[in-house]
Length: 196
Length: 252
Image 1 (cartoon, each protein chain N blue to C red):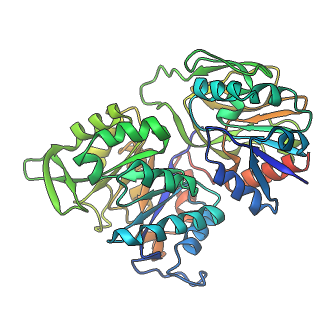
Image 2 (image 1 turned 30 degrees about the horizontal axis):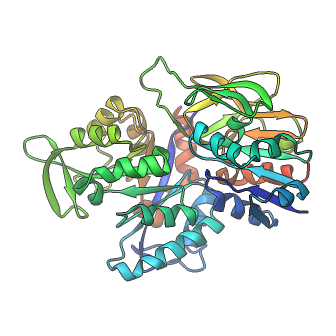
Image 3 (image 1 turned 60 degrees about the horizontal axis):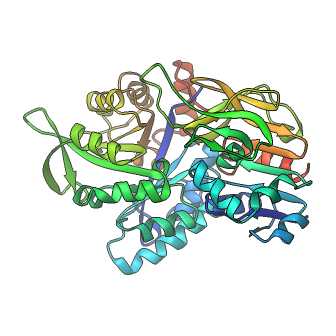
């Protein structure tokens, strides 16, 4: 089993590597096209800002590479948002794998803070990515933008309003939360992805 | 629903946890990794590791320690203590820390807040404020681990820092710290109401009811404590169960 983490200018990759190690898998971090294409599973992490990340991917043709991958791909946090059609964050056109739009949280109640930071529950869980994960399990989130609900939604979380905390289409999966930081629930999701 | 967070704090000196620790389950009580892992299993929502190592030469030990913590711990953690430059932050984040906490260095040169937020994102920049309520009934900012008084009001400094880009504020009341008589509710609530970032309350937590009060009256997003967890005076599972029963949104 070969797992590759796409190397680019975003993300806390070390935590993802260690989370994989904790479930017994060694991953490689690379931006090498052949290595990414040959991998059994590809992880697309990301913490940062959408337009900078997309520009970086495009410059290196990594956008086309990701779009053409046939093996299971997991986008995490910004990685998932970049797989959507469009992000309000600096009006960025993204990869368009998921039609869902990425929007800024706009709470009307001043006591609700943006970004959302902390543990929130995930509901309406679908697909084998959440096999063995209970409805309402808690995962760790840090984000100011969210993907709207849509036909690719496979997990829903409520903050300001219900939104997509996970998306799925064909071989592409995305999670808004950080499975690598979400205790045993996150470890289960990572393990499920490896076994897809 | 987003939950309130319970955060144990570990003080580190030369790679070891300082302050007495009273855990039989842990093989090596002084080992911050073992202790952190134990808290994570117990349901802690995040951890804070505060390096109180005095000398610059010992800084390398910290990044190695952070790497080992990241290897083992499956919840988010913040690292603080003596962080001054982008390079300090970069090394800690690359080794797996999720957030860094700054205090005196940010006060002396507030531009580092902006630079850190721009380079690494606001979400990973925590501003720690040591606050003391003086006789004039105002809360003032203290520096250097509480040894140096400033004339700056806590509310002003917090607002300024948020404008510069800090993503979270860790507020320690020096009046309450170590007393186990409860958190500073008023100043916590004031910051929570005024600022658009999460507030972590610290100092004074002695029992479960104090945590309930800081989440309800104090409007805190998270509460931090050290010795009551280390000495098993409050067990995290019991604390979280109690808060849940009292209607606080909490991760069980």
